[in-house]
Length: 204
Ligand SMILES: Cc1cc2nc3c(=O)[nH]c(=O)nc-3n(C[C@H](O)[C@H](O)[C@H](O)COP(=O)(O)O)c2cc1C
Image (cartoon, rainbow, N blue to C red; front, side):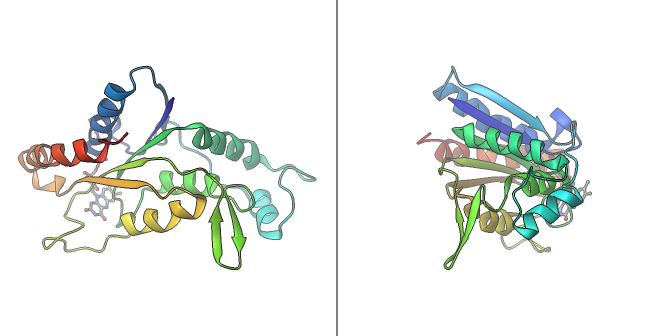
């Protein structure tokens, strides 16, 4: 039993999204005390962006790893293996400029790989990963959903569109919004989300 815990805030353990994801982790670990945790702090150890040779090899349909050195390849293989091996995936992400932080985008560019985690079919992209629960803990300075939202949200729709293309369809989002309104609002938002957290890991 493995849990892959991905975090991508520059604020480390002070981070709201990290603390929210930790509540998901606590619940999963209560159910699976012997679970092995694999952590990826994408800010503490940022991934390099994919390189030119790798992009060219993917775009041209050439087999990655053949011929010219493809330096992103080994890293992509390792990240995909980590994802493939995980029984549960927990992603902690703040909203940055209406969407995911660039460090999370870099991770996605390594794991969403044609011919490996998805294939192109006449019906569209078909994922090759076995489905499993993916919990996504999101924090945002303002409201990003509901009547009080005054900004577009490209984060949740983006992940809802992209992750199923590699086979990950069992997505649960939990949110703490309006952190910029101050600590009291954030504390209240954490309290309000408890029940939702219980529900979303109930079947885990
Ligand atoms: C570069 C940057 C861009 C941000 N863009 C947005 C945004 O578009 N919308 C929003 O509501 N909050 C935005 N924020 C605020 C964060 O989402 C908010 O502070 C969040 O609670 C941080 O979560 P964390 O503690 O997990 O890092 C941004 C923060 C940073 C640093």
